Image 1 (cartoon, helix red, strand yellow):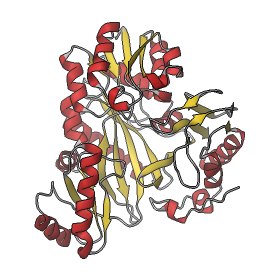
Image 2: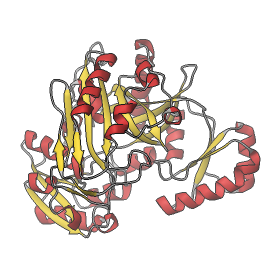
Image 3: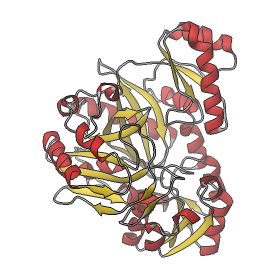
Image 4: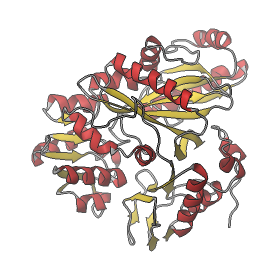
Length: 449
């Protein structure tokens, strides 16, 4: 087992890793920017190192500074969390070259499954259904021909990134070239690569993702799916587990497909296979996340697994720790997660500043993962996530009632947050009835209190 783990991240995920390390008897090292000098992860880690100014490019994304911090403190492993460098194959490769364990998949696997084109090819070879699409587009004429062959509507996607940047929906052939130019410019600005490809666009799919875990001894398991259909501009707002859209038969079929796929590519550690589910119940592979995700907490609540602890154990060469019921995990109850952000609930514009009052909800079945405290100053330089509010109950209606109760107890003053947005969301008739798809937010109207 590792003796000391450096966490190359900040916020609640840094605290989450620190807690897992402490329970495993592993020393932890926090890195931080000047803007995060008073952050909780710097206080709760065994050691902390300032790695640069507020700019993420000069601190949390600065590989030489992070590697230097690991070498100076004697850390023998690095956990990347999510975001920042968590899916950067060059970073994983640098760790390997420096003799520091990277808590995640290998650089080779990250390049294979982190690249959308190569991941599509790998999943096709493994027998996973994918939407009709193209490889990387080299010419406009190639795009025009492919679009007509696939059929409109289509979606243009950036090969190197995610989060909605470089992603454009095209319904009319006359608009294809203009949207291609815009998508390429966004992709280049956001990810340093203008490479894009085309894929058939589904009008009203559900977004379903499957949590997978795999060790270096040939064992792998798909431990549960999550419903992530409530999104705004491809950014998730609320997640649930399990998905009410699946029967047990569908659930088992999907997990079998995922386990076969990750075994075939030789994937190790944790990851997530993301799918679109159409109105006829057909699954199509979309992409893979080669890291822990923000919403891993809902899977933990319905499986009883500590996925961050599992990550660390797997990276240390241990076998999978979990056991299954007849080879399959059966979800226990229902979990919902709301992402509580520092943002204006009407415009979704970030709202940095000082938190003047804070009350966290509690009670049976309520979990709050957060890094904020009364007096904490939310910096303007990073993601706006303040907390993840997660509830667990015996079924979905009970989980919705518990979430509504917990949101009512949650108080954050001094800055704008999306708490009221979530209070209204969990009461929306379509949400309560489970009428979900990726266009839910187009039907949702926030009412200013």
